[in-house]
Image (tube, rainbow, N blue to C red; front, side):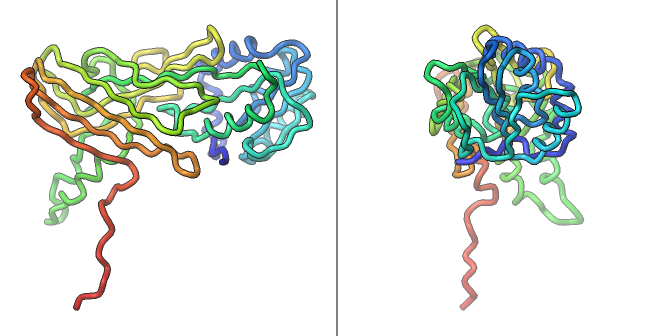
Length: 321
């Protein structure tokens, strides 16, 4: 198991450092977890800012680990600023070797729907190997939420593939347009009913799979094009942050599990199933479905998609007889 993390251009790290909501919450996490004289590990250190904050908070030694070469620049930045006491390690957090156990571990390892950074398995593996019994961990809890939405301002379902292109009918491609968990900025005014808790987990002990189930009954006639989803995180006890639509802006967005657009009537119910498993690289793989029923329980429409079989079953490539 390895950590994917932020193997991205430095522009992405700039984007994160410009996110003051994130920075304030992470600094509060450091203050909660780091005690004077403690030994700590920053997993997926990236630009190294959290490692430096830990050192300034009184940590005696900090192990700052990242598989990305950006750790080389973080080490140079620390040296340029006269900051010592940090061991910079370019390597995989799941297999790295340290000379000692640590008092606390922390990691900013969350994607838009928590999983996309593909690091939870690796940070859990590190903590089991190197964290002292009773040691501090950040983040300490993640909760996932969802809510029906009319997301046509962010994504017009299969619009391009519904139109002829130079006289060709492209509709064969339309189903694939629904097989992508889309990153969107969800507008609160277009959310339907109330948000629901879909799942919660310990980021250092992530389950092997998730089976999320929820349903909503519409209180009035509404268009629905899918389910918007986001996370809420406890970076440390008492240090909470949410990416719910309408909350203070962060560099995180929400995601959309798209469904065929429906002009639903008051009393109609949408039942959602979202299943998640993780491949050998810890990339999340999603299957989701939506079933509409009327107020009498009669099924109106059902659809099911996944993000790992975009283009259907393999062709029969045997030569013609």
